[in-house]
Image (cartoon, protein in one colour):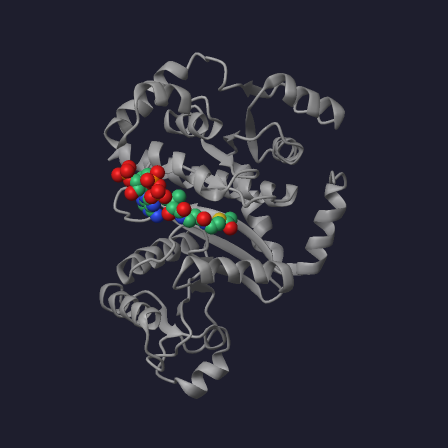
Length: 357
Ligand code: ACO
């Protein structure tokens, strides 16, 4: 079904979430201060085009569309969308940039089993082409994943753009806008069964990102066990991660392993575990022991918890690529573009600071 009444939908959500939606409004305002060029890999899709029109009109981003131009223009005509003089590129046709992108991809992956013939073919894929545009600075961020599975969208970004210096894992985070305020969930999308050290790396990455949104992170490492109450591979892994975090990051507000209700209910935590370094206020950043638990938790919150899920925010890549969840709504796509623009602003500022040194 085509969503035509964006404003009514927006109003409904704002009234439901009240002031808790302030963070989202602040983020929109931040994005508008320095809009970036965002390339949409799946532009032959109504929801993507509608979101692209909204971010263009709201001056959040300058969209660039990837796909068959005729098909994209036909959808725009049929649905009365108007993106003005928007740039449309078809990676299936040999563009002025295809050759350089192909050479780059081949050079990067030739010792990972990719032949030059394959590289030529891969570059006609919109996710590879879009990742190259970001890599070469011809776009500031890539948005994709609405119609494909997560892994096939994130792989081109890992292969072409790679991870930020000093970071060992990329990870996915969700901002959950709930009637009780914003919460951050991770890793909800990438690392299937992280080791204790990988859990530490994921926590550090997520904690830093929450801080970048001007929110003081209070981190709980979740489990089905509370501070050694249960044995087993998973509680032991989370316990080991907490120990490393306490030893290496003494300033981080983090504790665990603990069950989710103790993380979110300060009275319960104080009554039972008065020694916890999280005492006083609920945690706002929840780290899950496995991808399965994190992914299930955020989707339950979304479907029966009345929360709005903003994300998945992909953290740790050198340049901004954000992968939508399959079937995202127009509003969710707009939110992701907002995140992508802020991510690009932060990464551009860091790059400028580095080159000035
Ligand atoms: N962090 C950093 N680097 C990574 C990571 C990571 N988490 N994962 C892979 N890499 C590296 C690889 O080591 C490889 O390095 P190389 O350049 O030296 O070869 C490079 O990135 C490319 O990786 P690939 O081999 O192409 O990818 P891989 O087979 O490792 O798969 C993937 C990575 C796709 C992220 C995999 O871990 C996965 O499928 N995760 C689960 C995704 C998923 O299904 N999510 C749930 C649904 S999402 C949702 O609900 C919105």
